[in-house]
Length: 114
Image 1 (cartoon, rainbow, N blue to C red):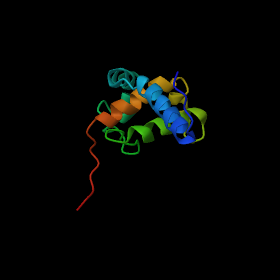
Image 2 (tube, one colour; image 1 turned 45 degrees about the vertical axis):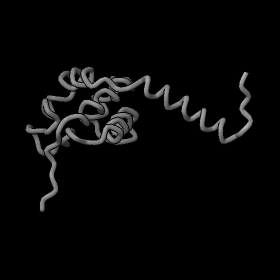
Image 3 (tube, one colour; image 1 turned 45 degrees about the horizontal axis):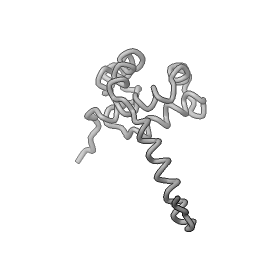
Image 4 (cartoon, one colour; image 1 turned 30 degrees about the horizontal axis):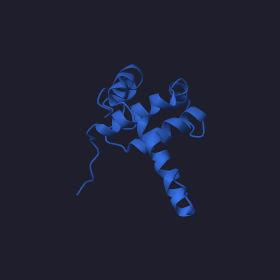
C-alpha cells in the first residue's frame, strides 16, 4: 500500500480526481444541436446568429463557460429575463452544458470593426 504523507501531494491528487470526473461528464455537441433546434432556434436562429430580431443576442462563437453560466442564472432567476427564465427552467445541467458546447462550436458573426 502506498502512503501519501505530503499535504501538497494529497491536494494535487484531489484536484486530479475532480478533473477526471469532470471530463467524464463532457458536453455532447450533437445533443446540444438537437436541443437548440427544439428550444432556441426560434429566437436565436438555427446557427445562433439571430437573424430574426437584433435585440436577441447572438450565441454562436460565445464561450461555453459564459453560455452555461448565463443559462444557469436564467434558470435560477439570478439573471432577470422573463422569457429566458421560462426557457431555461426545464433544462437540466447536462442540457445547458450541451447547448453551451454546441453554440461555442459554431462560427460567430460578431466582429470588431477596424
